[in-house]
Image (cartoon, rainbow, N blue to C red):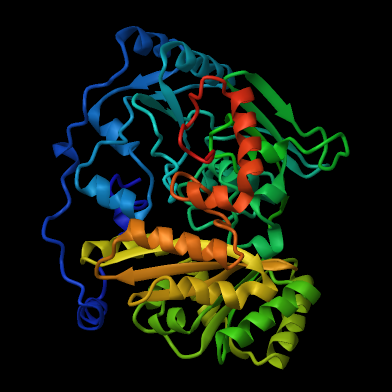
Length: 505
């Protein structure tokens, strides 16, 4: 992972000159005054951990304290995170990086954290965009889980797989594909995020209409906490009290460290077809998506860009600056040939009747080819001096127009693009991208968070709470909800060593 940006440095590409000219002429974007600091020039502060603490840690995992490793585990991948690391900021640089080999090693490290008084930040792929890797702690270690990377078991009868949490998305698909199965979870962070991160952040993949969110896929969990081990999930459904798995799905490393997951899997689809549709406006397209998800037939992938995102071309990363008119929708169908053909034909009938115009497979295949490329585009925009950031929310269908307008109104004077990224029978997610020459993002983010809560939306659909959404999350769940979270935290993490300042208001 590029230390100062997203993903594989070899995949980054400069913006086309016509796009740079557009940014300059329409938004007044200018190159930044200073280039990014070189990785080798960043000198983190000396580790604040005592020698005995480091020696004790080394008995339970590989310990790294060199500057480069520490810098590469600094912060996440939000735009403020990237701007900070590009300037050489080391405020949230871990004092050490520890790589345990197994569940017992994680337990031992958590016990040492309580003994020696340092915090622990679980680290999977490092892809958090909500301040999830910037703890409120003086001394902390990054708990890098990459060595927990085994496919433990495949149950072909039950169609489940047990995975260690350090596995990244592509490796999961490779391992499961060897048995003829897929997890079917493809978020934009797929290439770099870990399955532990998918669970801890309650991730949602781009194929969620067909496969479900990640929390829909999880049937079992093993978690290491400072108070001990907890194992959950004897079967997919149980009436034996509240579902304790839900305490850890979305818990962002604040309640425990997930070390093993059992997930539902499906046969690798024989056919994948993606196609584009055009709608005259966002309201018409939204109604069409709602009809499909509520009454069927349901595509595997279903998303809709608003007029601005379609015009700019952001819906297809390879077509930035070459967009079209109206609103572009993408529908994807995966499965066996006859079943895919039937669903595709049925969905086409519905979409046509509700105002859609078929564009054929080219827009859909173009989207599928570049489905993981948008973060690279964000880096290219930062490189030419633009500020670009994303945020997402969710609400019921009936309230979607109100929430959509509320977020846009909270960001006056900026280029604001949006797409419906995930759809459900009762609700949908809105994913916004903001591009501007400059912005007081902390103030703007606060204004947007307040607008989302006031408009009846949830503060996050799939990015999580982190530290960026703490105040809004507290308002969303209310004082009693905050008290419940604090009580859980006190029971599982009595010394407060796990990711302090994250998730729990």
